[in-house]
Length: 363
Image (tube, one colour):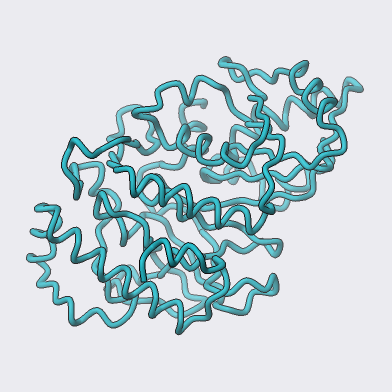
């Protein structure tokens, strides 16, 4: 099955057995493609004694530590075919991942993201408020995960404004005019968790105390980038939602988990508060002792696989995050596939994620 044919399948429609067959075939195909086209990846597979015939399920696909993309330039297409280079978030002094995209991979990232997100928001484009500043996306040829996130989600917006200026101050007049112009319409909001809390929620709270209120009850907020700073401030997921609702009336709030090394295959949070894997990706938790797969309900290191990457060998990655798979095919929201939660970063792992790295710099 080609990737275009995969895109015709609803993202949360396949049960465990059917999804595993589909993904295993695609991931095996990508493994062989990258072995043939990326010498560094071929050397790794040779060192571990990779046998293609041993790949019988998604858990058998060899994985790279995500940190490798900070240390080595890995690409499976000629340099002249690279149309975009993305970098991960990082605090000052940290090395960043470099992800090389050709036209096919970049296009499939966008198509996949549209399929996943529109299954939550609907197919129509909405007026959009970006809870960030415009300066983040000025360099389109090489931009960070933060800029990539903004541009990626911007395709769901019909008319867009940035709620913050380049000094990260809320532009209250522009926000007021935008809401008046689109009164009664459903509005999409997008941003990164800590920035939303620090620069949007806290300012709305201050304004409300002065008698100035904004009504976002028709809004749907999608946010991501990590919770490290907010958890340290005792702001839970529930408190984040409740306080935003109290200050502006918004009820539809969806967190998501994703990374620049596998852009496009994001894991959206459903109405039940669970992160979901679509048919284009999967999550495996592995034990720290021997990297064997964990059982459902058992905490382990997160491995993520993606059916997208053709220009770099990023289709199977061992992250530095810890989490637990809560179930498969039986979430009360009705979506099939695995659903899970992220517990946080592994001990001594570098800070990453747009929200967390910004929070570290902000502090």
